[in-house]
Amino acid sequence: MKKFPVNKETDLKSFISEVLGLTKNKAKEIIDSKNVFVNSKRVWIASHTLKKGDIVEIADIDNSFSWKPEKSVIYEDQFILAVQKPPFLESEGRKGSVEYQLRKVLDRRLKAIHRLDRETSGVLLFAKNEKIFHRFKDLWHRKEVVKVYLSISYGEAKFKKKVVNMPVDKKYAKSIFFTKKISKGFTLFEVEIKTGRKHQIRIHSSKIRHPIVGDKIYGLKKVEDPLTKNVKRQMLHGYRLRFLHPFTGKVVDIKAPVYHDFYNFGKLVKLL
Image: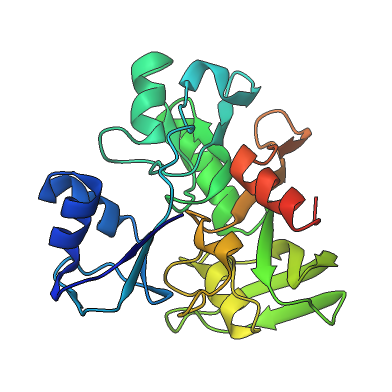
């Protein structure tokens, strides 16, 4: 984490450009990553006015998430393929997404069956053709897939298990939180979701007053702890998918190991 005092009134983009010796476009990219703090508050507006005496902090840039599609496969049969999705990649759609890269390197017919948030790592499942895709989407629609996540949240949970039934975007949503370990003001949760609403775990975590570390939208508004300021993404990992395979009739249980940033932070606060 780099810390810079502000000596004169200016806008955030110009300030970062000057202190880091970058173009204003590059400075804006850093601001857009939402890893810039002004007086311990996360700021992502490039035109934000800085005043003399303000303190700007910028998280260290992490370029260690290089991803090779062919080395990310954690399960494969003649119907589906599962990969360990890294953080900072979209699941599908746009150029550069996990789906785009897999299609380019492995098989142009691959189609993402579900999604993970851009910053969320974990198991991501793909169908090998359109017919297989629709059969597996039926599993999701019938809620016949066990979906388990790991998260590191603020605060030490006082419960072993908590069932959360709170609407997300006015739609029914259910998450079950299991406390795995508490330490140093943080909790490692295992979260099973019974529905798949957008940002469901992140919203529910915030609602039960255990926001996920590194969550830039539903997390803490003011971050004082230097340990968590340098966390560049939400500490949320899609750990496990378990389902009855609609083609083979066998139970498939796929688990993805956590990425090094999740593991390193977990070790630092003695949760892993």
